[in-house]
Length: 81
Image 1 (cartoon, rainbow, N blue to C red):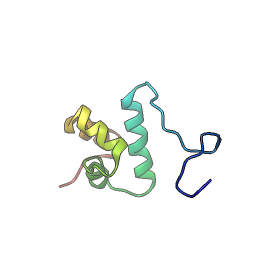
Image 2 (spheres, rainbow, N blue to C red):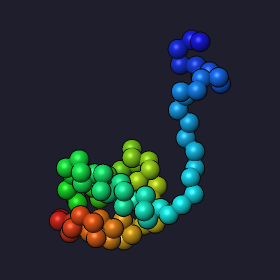
Image 3 (tube, helix red, strand yellow):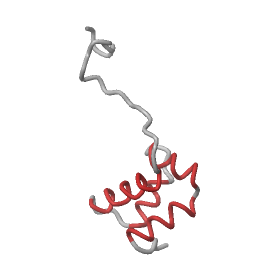
Image 4 (spheres, rainbow, N blue to C red):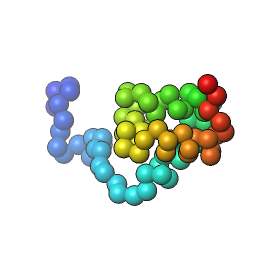
């Protein structure tokens, strides 16, 4: 198989799928993970606003700034200016 071509028989090929569920729990997990990595509440909030981080940006776009801020402050503490 040439490089950069997918093989339909490759069992190790990465596949993304939609998993229905509670986006609030998913968002809490993202916040906890970024805290574990050493990010401040302000840095985490800024990540949610960055389109490069597609998963968390989607939550920011769909649920809004207030939802994201509320969860970050609940889990990580106040978002300093």
